Structures are given as structure tokens and as C-alpha cells.
Image (cartoon, rainbow, N blue to C red):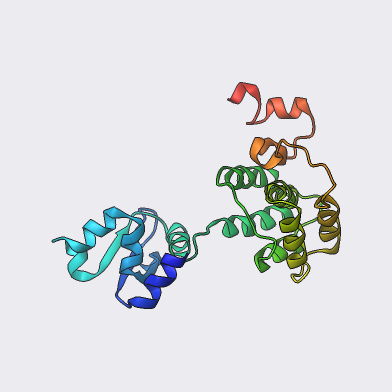
Length: 219
């Protein structure tokens, strides 16, 4: 993110991104302005497109073959490096509407992207306060933090936990976290958040698992 901040601070040369999807009208296109150097920094394709004799370079516009939702997430990723929080918001909706299939789909995508929230991030606090303590995404956040912080040593674990106290983390989650991060507490070596997304798919039993998309007949 240091590179991103440097680009934003040193240039105001912008290009216009326009989403163009076959299923959307021109009125539904998403338009956003982004820093030219930022776009070119992450994609050699755009570096060539905007610095050669192409019409995009002359008009400072780039057409993106995607719908407006994807375009919005792409711009968010350019400036923040993150896209997973949008999926988290959708997961909250899926939880509220009891949509198990959508929850499983989102958990698979978060697992595949190695979603790694920080316990210091207010987004994490907001997420945990919006979900029941036994939800799959809550368990994933807990597992991710515990298993990937434990490798940093007890001093770092204690420091990270103390930082968490300054956020609006649910009391139950914070207490459970404190107990697990106690230096003498033994943590299983196998990390559930790196092993399989099925750990977060809410399968009732092995029979249900075998008949689901995760089962052996589907792989």
C-alpha cells in the first residue's frame, strides 16, 4: 500500500473507467476516475494501452468488459488491495435470510482468497457484531487469527490481543480469543482455515456432505 499512497500523493493524472456489460444499458454503466499511474502500475496491459497510439490514450478512457458491480470492486481493489469485505457483507445477508447455499459459496471464495482480516480493523468488529458467535464466518475469522498469529510468538500474540480490546469486538469472542492465545495453551498444528473450505460449509453429517457439491462424487 506504500506504493499506492506514493502514486496518489505525487500525481493527479486521472483516467476514466467505464464498465460495459452486454446485459446492461449505457445508462447502467459504472463510471469511475482512477489515477493513471495506479492503473498502469498493476497491469502492463493498461500501461501499453494508455501510453501508445490507441484511442484510449487520446481520450483518457478505458472500457472494462464487466458489469458495474465488478467494476466498482476493481476500483476498490486498486486503492485498498481488498475485495473480501464486499463478500462479508453479502454473507451477513445470506445469514439473515437463512441462505445456506450462498453462505457456502461465499465461504469457499473467502477460503480460496485466503481472506485474512485484522483484529485491529473496525471492519472486523462490525462483521463480528453482525453475526452469531457460532456462524461459519465468525469461526473462520477466529481460526485465521489464532493459527496465523500463534506462529509469531507469545509477545506478539499478547500485543495483538491488547490491540483488539480497543475495538468493538464482541465480549464473548474477545474472551475466547484471550483463552486461546494464552502462551502456554497448546494449539493444534493443522490450521482449519487452510485445510478445507468444508470446515465452514455447515454440513449436518457425512451423509449430507456426500450428497452436497463438496462430496466425493462431485470432485
